[in-house]
Length: 77
Image 1 (cartoon, rainbow, N blue to C red):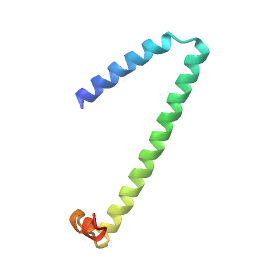
Image 2: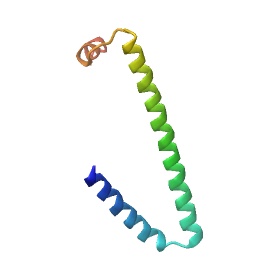
Image 3: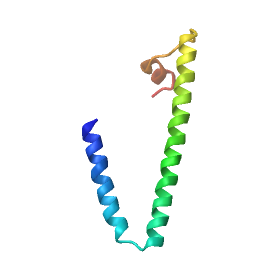
Image 4: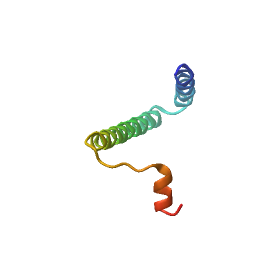
């Protein structure tokens, strides 16, 4: 966890250095794009969590599961 935080801090410092080299207008646009991507990622994470919770509820309700090996055989992989 700490290593990931350090990498994130380094990436932010590098991004800030690159942004400071851009014009204000261009830097603003880059920041807007980054914010849009972060929002999209948060939405995808929320969808993944909802799907995982739904799957967990089905398992808890007794729905049959299948092993990865059995699925691969069924799909002929």
